[in-house]
Length: 180
Length: 249
Image (cartoon, rainbow over all chains, first blue to last red; front, side, top):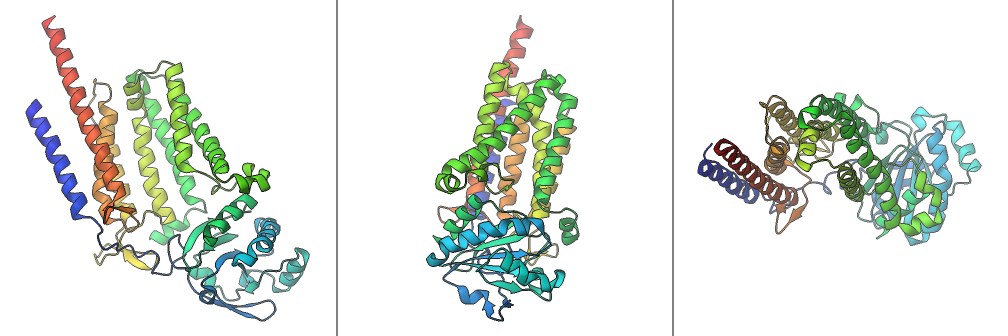
């Protein structure tokens, strides 16, 4: 290819690319993240209403204004068990700053009678909610236990951690981030 | 179909695909490394050492950035949590390690990059598959018939576009006729990849925006494209004058 021909083609490519950048600019900021409920970072956390072991009703959207960790777990799952002490420690440390943990026991695939002894064994003081029909698990596209969703004060998921156990430093950094 | 693909792998499904891509890419690169004057041993080392640097550097830099959290629980430093990681910092460390290794072994820049290009091309493909499996790098909403249901809306299958572009680039490079000018192979990959990113970013629903709606990735891709084309032009010029000098001599 001749020198001039080649340089003309390169220049045309760059001009066309520049035009494409301006044509495809997202002036309205049309990203729907943050508006649609989806179990994904940047999206609104799907809402749910569940009962705790003690019979108290919790609705996620009613906790707007607080930073929430939604943790999906089961008593038979070793990493779920392993991360509970660190979660309890963080709950005690950050609860007065507006941090809440909703630990959703996957009761529909767990032994319901094992949940209360588990709570007592680990001396957990945060609410343990019972997911009895798998609806919330479907909403949150549960594929692995434990699964944790760090939700900020506006109800937006800021971080999703699939698997575990979560290290204390991970919990601390993520909690401090959603409390900001 | 998307759900079936995503269910094929257990989390961290994206990591599994990226590791597989590195392995296949390295295997392909090995097949042609000698042609670029790089030994298989050097090729493996220039991938392996930076990879170690990436893993260790990413974790250490994350710990330094969150010193108070790690000071209260130092054993978190050796936790298996993949999220305790600074990917940009890790990448910077990997590049430094690669440069130090390259200098110590006296590896020439362009032939080394040419030898690594099959790895980069397969890695780009693996990244697209990883995005598809995890649902990240998702598209903006569309009413087009090939839109996919993802994250509560019908969206452009941006990950599929990414995979198709990566496949096309890999095919073009793999079947490209033999090129004696060092750097051409890598620069062609860089120009094609930045060009495809620049075009396809327009269909993404998760772009980071700057200056009243411009997509950051497109701006960066344009700069990479411009540099690649400039270097391609310069390399061609140098080669032509070298050939002319030889024929005159």
